[in-house]
Length: 143
Image (cartoon, rainbow, N blue to C red; front, side, top):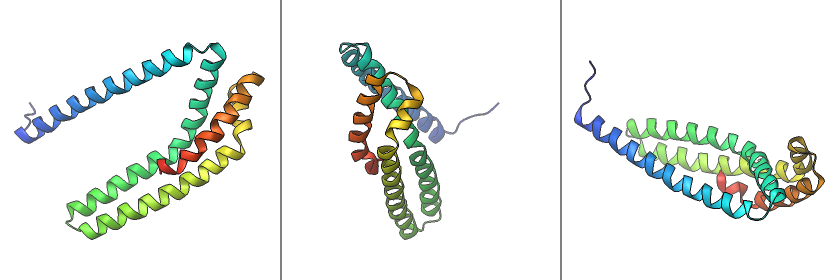
């Protein structure tokens, strides 16, 4: 039988509480967005969905950088090398921002091909191209 020490139990309880809260807030936000977009019609809903799918591809490098940065920073903090942890954090931020800027540029250039992969509806493709090119402005901030 595995017995949790008190610290691990409190960490476990806190993580489940925070995760539940996070799911509740995100669920409400998603439900609100869906309600707004569906009120605009089927074309708007399809366009919204496809733009989210196309943009989600660009988040893959961000997840990689987040995992690597978290690991390196945690190891440096665990080794009590705070300056090294700050260096890792700064370098991860700079590299992540540069990579997401390049990904955003590719998304801007290849928006038509990417959206055409998901749909053959001309109206949806045209609106998604415009939408993706607007969203590209914010891509570096995800780094």
